[in-house]
Image 1 (cartoon, rainbow, N blue to C red):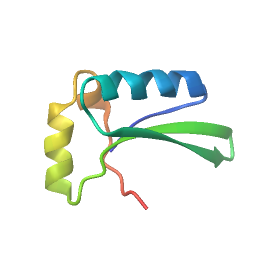
Image 2 (image 1 turned 45 degrees about the vertical axis):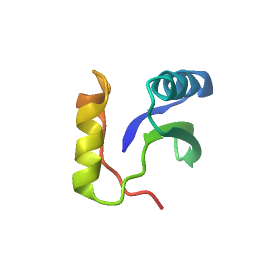
Image 3 (image 1 turned 180 degrees about the vertical axis):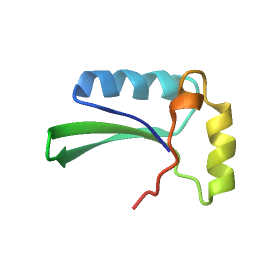
Image 4 (image 1 turned 90 degrees about the vertical axis):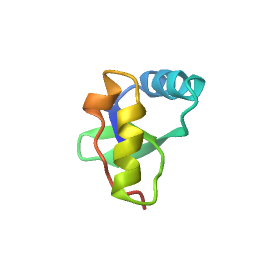
Length: 73
């Protein structure tokens, strides 16, 4: 599940640290886009959509509302 895409690596790291501190498996990945470098913050992965939905419901606000379930390579 993707929780955000940040231009600032520091902003992404802050979210990663916050969620790790809350006990979630979370990571960031750097991606090149047409608009420059972004740092995606993702939690999981889960094996199926139902598990991802359960994970999403356990996330603290506002992440539970803003998270998008996406495929992980």
